[in-house]
Image (cartoon, rainbow, N blue to C red; front, side):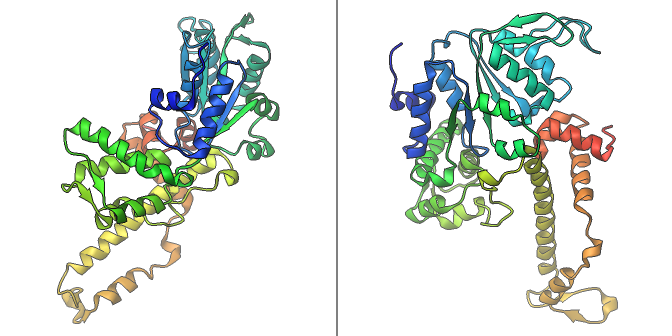
Length: 389
């Protein structure tokens, strides 16, 4: 097979950046592509882990075979085995016909298991057998089948910590982690941030038929120094918002600032090595979303108070027979007893219930709105005994 280099891979898969950590990840991907070794890709959410397995597949002898990407966190626990390994007709309620699983369909190709840390323990046992022997058994069958699939996995979870907590099999981890590839977060790729901004700006200008947005030197510095907790995904979202909303095509710090959430602990990602599990992060994200929504509502209330009367004074009901300053009103509002604040469980349950109602009980859409996996949502519904209808 003809050798390829990092530059060719970047051009072919539209990868932007010259960071040493990114280049190292691509070098490893190229070197391992010609083998059948398992690869485990790690990195925070939004760093672009899904590009690496595509590059490995296209640079391998399997490039003419199937490439199938599976989000393990988006498949309900009760059906994950059927999706991966297939099932026989009548093996469970709803199994109206025999179905091939991804390992059978991808025979001779590559299977990318994203969010692999979300797999249930009993599915991890089946996966380990495939990796070690190339054998699997369909759900409801006793016949052993063979497959020749190259497995590449990815996760943003701290798997060693998950192993310590009994949530992930140690033997499976070592089998997947034959070749580890780590993708650096965007905040460690400062030299690439403005390059990515320009790329996204040009793309959206072409999509929306408008001139591309540009940044002043001061705005560029603000962009580069920002922490980017959502990594490349967040940067792309910010560029799209600016491209559509702002009428000016040259953006300064004042115009850019509203699109970058303040450097507040609520917005900062947990360091990769400290992450406990996908479930913890998902539940934290629900709570933070609700808390941020509550904070926005408080800010809106304060703004309404400011607009009730003259800038220096606010009238609060004729029966008071008096007026108080705006500052006093705000301070009084902020002295609400903590006892009146709902528990985190109540807030989480209310957020899930609201999302389900808004999406007419569709779990997938509700999970997407909440920013969690469908499996985590299903577990929470059972935990809180939430009526989905």
